[in-house]
Amino acid sequence: METTLKKLTSDDQKLLVEILIRQQYAIEIVSSELNDIEAGDKSTDDVTYNRLVSLYELLRIK
Image (cartoon, rainbow, N blue to C red):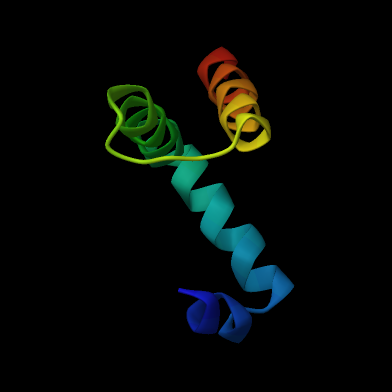
């Protein structure tokens, strides 16, 4: 994934995020990630978890 991310320009990344948000996929991805963490299927630090919760709330408000 790191290699793919490095290949994308800043404009490419912005476009990708815009599409994910517009198509409502972004909130589904964040929700799935939170569910995996809360179920114990994935682990993360508290800072990342809290950032994901905040991101979910921002996307949900849209």
